[in-house]
Length: 162
Image (cartoon, rainbow, N blue to C red):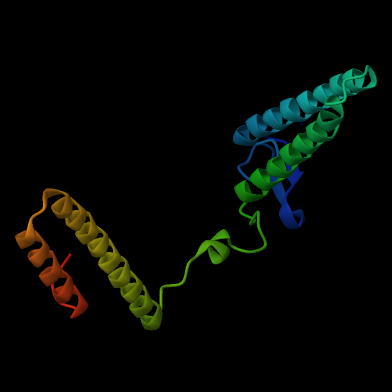
């Protein structure tokens, strides 16, 4: 019997109706098949076109002669992966989260980061004081210099904020 009621062999040899969600001809798979067909065909045509140009003397086209088949192969790879994931089988042998996950920092790492941050903030404060000193020197204010020296001594003792 022809049509959507026809049975096909599914995973493990179990019968499955054509058009069922896990089959290759399911409605949502047809668009993936058509897209893959268009992409691979387009890459094949582009490869043939670039071969003609390369043989005609265009040296850059030799790069494209190699590039378009790569794109076509990548299209096939993604087509296969999308279908495997749609069927519930993993597309990767290793979970993507396992190699993207960043472990939380250890207390030692947090302490080292806090020390680096403190040193950087102190450096920025010293730069600000140097700018103030230059401004005061150009203005010739001795009271301003005394305040700046007192602030620097306070920073050297580890006191004060920013």
